[in-house]
Image (cartoon, rainbow over all chains, first blue to last red; front, side, top):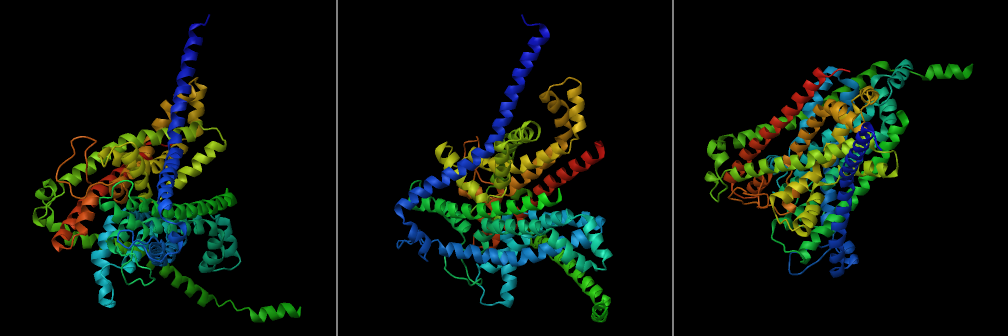
Length: 302
Length: 296
């Protein structure tokens, strides 16, 4: 016979384990999401490669799935993505690192607490707004200095994307620099180093894995960014490295096809999954690499 | 001895030069910050200059139109609102539950480690990939079509990692002594979490959720990918109806050649930015309240 208290205990235990399994299921949703992404991409990409050879996909330098003369070489989309990302990184990496050094080493804590949230507004502005800014403000402005600039071009898209990614680089690099123990700085000062020398020879090298992680994540963000390039870089798949002309990135291509009415099962429908798989594989590799670097930097100071 | 002397002779501190270099570099880093802030200022000024004169009650309450002077954002605004509510209903409980599990109950094993790496990876997956996931799973496999609920589910998965990460941080900020006190009084683990830990972490969790919802409001690419329509002259009646949202309406107007539509886009951007400002203000307000009220 169970006593009253024991029965209450039993009920309580049953309820607890039910709740615990519900919470566990919620945590598993993230695993299901990853599996869902991989499964969806894999199955349509598989269908795609039954119709198009992998060799063509990786070696052909023309991408014309929407024309009558169809070519399925990923290179024009890939080079466009790389050109825009490279321009964005030329803006975001130096400016982001400088801003991080300024906030963590030069600015007073008071000033830093005011400036940092304002800088982070940049990261919260919707990308479609940056697209508007790139197409209707930056491009006309640049055209005054570079007359041969096309209406749609990689340059404005890349520059604006760089500004968008700046706070990500600044914020993550600053976190890494703040994790450097104060004693290291003081030791360097005691040896007669100036502030600049402390920053470049002590703080930056000690936080390097964190900074590298931030840089890699920034590259991944640039490669996956969609609306800025869909609006401002154009929709012409060109195999070129010239940033002054219109080109189409992987993400812009997916948008272009999605805007049309592509029936399920057609080759056009499958191409966006093949392109999406390429995009996913590249960004996932970068994210994992960045995570590795971040883990290393955590190990050092904790 | 001679070696030491030669070092003495060769070493010149050149302190003035080094300090000047330092000052120069300080200015350089200040310039980097100023470039960021200036761009933000120019962007807002540009949008306001282009779009303020289209703002009117009619602009908010009219449907989009082929004639720019009549086009408004009614369907987009309503769509954004519906989507927001749905995403909050789906993602908030899921995110908090996952965070509670990982922070309060999860055993330290391989599966937990995999879930954690997986969540931080998902947070960095490009949003358009979520669009492809939504297209493949919700639109096709679940046959939800290009509906409001398909969009809401897609965006919920997109913001879930953000909510989980924020909620975990809020839970971690609750000191262990609170949990120990609860357990010492005879409460079970769940009772302790439910009645002591969760209320203490709630403001932090809400702040994170609001910021995640702000992110959802601004998303365009995944919704275009699942096939949300760009021209919708009606408001959805049920969650299975087609829809549009503010960023897609803006994108649609930007893509048109006529400058009159670009002005409408700028007007739409102003509305979008105001909505986001309200959300961020709410988050800052909550965070400030949290810092004032709870001291351990």
